[in-house]
Amino acid sequence: MLRWLLLISIILPSMARAQGVVINEVLADPGQSDADCEWVELFNPGSTEVDIEGWRFGDNPLSDTSLILQPEGFLLLARDLIDDDGDGLSFESIWGNGSGVWGDDSLLEGYPALKVSMVLRNEDGSVTIRSPQGVEETFHWDYTQRDRSWEKVNPLGGDGPENWKLCQELSTPGRRNTWTLPHWDAAIFARGITFFPFPPQPGAGVELKGWVYNLGDRQILPSSLIIYFFEDSDLDSVIDEGEEIEQRGLEKPIPPGDSAEVSCLGGPFSAGSHLICLLVHYPQDEDLSNNLAGRFLGVPFVRSSVVINEIMYDPGKGPEWVELLNRGEGEINLRGWMIGDEVGMSAPLSPAGATLPEGGFAIVTSDSSAFSSVYPWVRAPIWGVKGFPSLNNDGDVVKLVDVGDQRVDSLSYSSKWGGDKGVSLERINPQLSSSDSANWSSCVAPRGSTPGEENSIYAPILPPKGSLSISPNPFSPDGDGRDERAIISYRLPMETALITIRVYDLQGRVLATIADQEPTGYKGEKVWDGRDKQGKRLSIGFYILYLEALSSSRGVLVNLKAPLVIAGRL
Image (cartoon, rainbow, N blue to C red; front, side, top):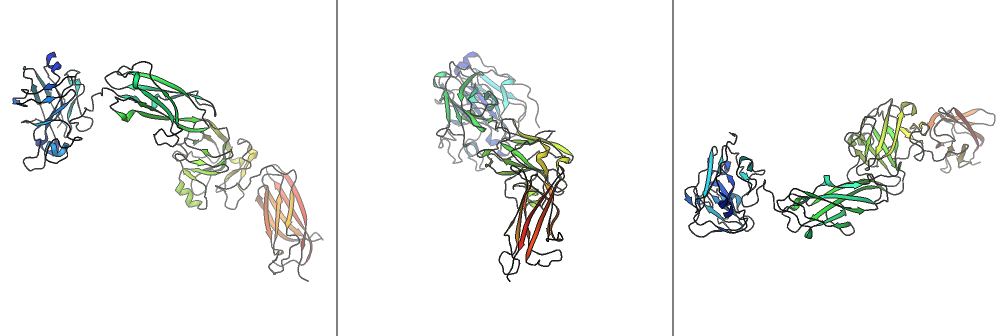
């Protein structure tokens, strides 16, 4: 059971500090590894060698011959250094290489160790070392944690309770304690990297700033420190050819616990996401894990380079979704982009590094698997996004924000614009305004939507008046396999309409109805096999094809007609 530490009592005159040997780490409760594996670590924090001949651990001598402890060197005192009782447990078998010999592995066993008689109590225990001059140091603990050592925080920082803590790992025999600062540690952190101006303009320069932190206990000298600024284009954390932006040094030393600002001018940067990294190089650095940090620089895109092109706010079945279209020039990397509504924003809407080619579509939804089960034919990228906004059926705001936190496209739609249960709301022309209700209407495709495809009501520039054509004309539905059907093509001066197409004889009688109040976009085609309302083939002769188109949104009625000839073998 763990109890609070009551006392750490060490009596050590200044002359003992000069001799430079301290109790540095204690493992009193090795847990399942058995009491044979108890140990104490000594450390020489001074700058001169110390001979421990004549020193004592408790009442037991450490060495009766000369044994030199190097400056900043460790000496391990183990209850059972080598497995000599056959139980397979010893300091060497757990913290060494398990060969049964200490010192034959420079990596794991590169420090001196001695077998010393000891019994370390898990509760209310203590250890004492004494120099030949009678100076002693005692560490007292009131509790332990299984498999976790007590560490001295600062070997020269005094011996009060605040200078001993349980190891942040399990134990660190023969190496720097987890709580002990290295002498030299130059560090870079992402939180210290900033850009000015922000957001920057595409094609403009940007001032890149960062901070170098001294996390060691000795000052960092400017003579040998170099900071590299680079753009990590391939995200491999390595300065590849062409990625370096600038090198910078320091003007003055950095004291322990202090920091220094460094900066350079980078760019110009194109629109998109750029990973700007800083790498600090200091030859004496003892911790290389914090020498590299990066932060994404988001350069805004031109507004409406990517547009919201189709919205399924009332799917009937399956999830809601939004279709995006790259109407700009060249492919666009969507790393860091987000989609949202009036309430908030989603998580990033695409996988890292996902791109949208020029003219390409992408589907954004809450559940990509559920979407694919309803729309298995879609070949465009489908991105399931955490936090995808819930689209209200009566109306909502949809906004698209790029990596620079700039709004690229947005609209506030209403159900009056179009769309219905299982029918999407489609954009008529991606080059026209997103907020113009006249640029949106219901999908007229039989499936009710066109995800990943050109919208069913897409219209580039509307013709000033309609047109109607027939091919081939004449055609001959006589069963010989040639020109059996007529393709009727039309273009209308309106984005959407309801069309009726009929065939009349020269006396004005209706012989066939090809379309009856069918929804359509500004253009379309119908195929006719030359049969009348009863399914009989019409005879050879001249006929009139008549198309009537009604735009309910604009109240416009258009009438088109064209001559039609049915031919055949005589």
